[in-house]
Length: 485
Image (cartoon, rainbow, N blue to C red; front, side):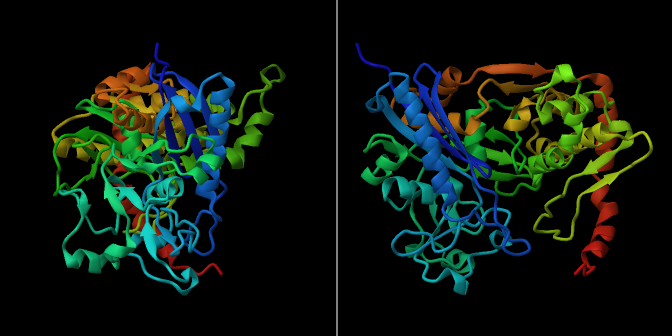
């Protein structure tokens, strides 16, 4: 009788590293989580991960998962493969010896809006890569990256899924071929876990490390969003909305076409909400203590989130006319933009403000998702919601109501880790195709049906929200021009 095999999913995001170990039956048998340190903001519009924090958090989370795995009586040698997914749209600069020449540049840094440009502070830079390339290198010692995490100023040919052979593309990106890593496709092996990395991570030496795609594509796979008309809403620091497709759309006006984590498939993603769940965390941290202070003694132990959600649930759909416009991190094409709350009057409480922040996220997503659906000629019929925000019943109902379609969350919220497990398990021959893998690994949880009366209110607000920047841009330009010292 053969022992059960296992796969590891490594998901490193903006705020934490998560390592989950899955049995071939689909059960999560061990997991480790470790928070990342707060981003450092050394200057206006710059954001870096301090020291070697992405790797350090990966190590800490892996050690916790490995310890839990062996404590449960499992054998490390029964782990067949490990898939890795690391936050996209970042830039990593390496010295000739493979160490960081500069802390990892986060996607919110203005340098990511432009091609790589050398700065004196970097010193000697031998390689420029992505976070997935870097973490894969730390694990295997191989300078190999996935072709599906090259978003932004990279000379990639999306048709050949390899580096471009056009000299102009390299000149525009300010890179040379010897500076970048070799490429493999999602589901291919990056390399095998080195002895040094094995010791640090607590996982077996020689374990195959499997490439996936960029984090949102991996999350879409791990959420089971495979059928036409099913959209994923990813509630992260950057909130994204996307759906899978079979054709490469090169001239889309309302969305981007990315390589999916399913080999041979594509992911359509519209513009999202920058600092989306960050704005929710900001509100919680600034005003949550006051919400907790008002809780009855018999409700002690309730979390800040529970207290705020209870207040928001008591507020009518539409927050009695209080509308939040989400641009709390200005987009590259409009650096002057600010967030706004419009429509204050004497009725509005803390619960109104919090609900309006949540509604503003859903309305901004609809502003971007509706044109994508129209261009694809495929209306959304169902939403799957992932990320920590999916734990909120209020947020789930708002999403269903604003979009007018059912919204579902999965029992395991770490969708990117599941997506990693799919790619790793297919490589190891545990599952034959993504459909089989997701059927085993994904279990749907609660479904929230839209309430028609709420949707009618949100239809009116959505029409207003979609035009908000046309009214506010002139004001925020003037505010941005003021020198506040």
